[in-house]
Amino acid sequence: MQIDLELNTYKGKLKVRQQGSVTEVLDPVRRKYVGLTPEEYVRQLMIRYLTDSCGYSINRIQVEREIIVNSKSLRFDLAILDYKLQPYILIECKRHTEQISNRTFDQVSLYNQSLQADYLVITNGIRSYCASIDYDQKTYRLIDHIPNQNQ
Image 1 (cartoon, helix red, strand yellow):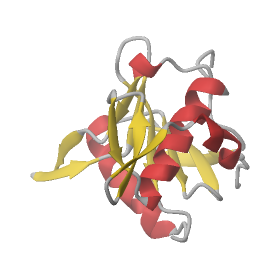
Image 2: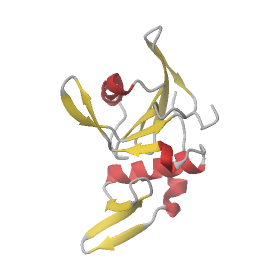
Image 3: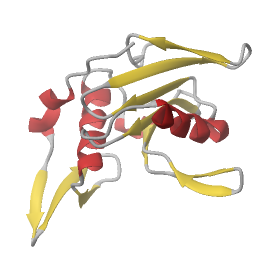
């Protein structure tokens, strides 16, 4: 079940600058300018969506944090923490030209082995999917929205 987040409507809210030959974007979570790669562009649009449309505080969003899964050091794209500061939503961002596939969902699921978030989201900025995880039944189901801060 695909979700249309209309992420491009947030591009005007990004603060972009040119540093020599490098284009950078201000990441409001990390509070610094970072290189504006295609994946970073999707990540920054997603951050704007989460804060502006879903009502999440910047203080509850984590960006590119390292986690250990099966003795491997990995980095997730975005995580939203709940009120107990536990992972609530885990988000994997891909560049807009990359197709969303089972492999993408496998990647975010692997990261979630360590984090145990309630929801998993994958997006390439054009196509987005959200899954609700049921740990007791060891299943998931695709849902038609990304939960906002009040859910």
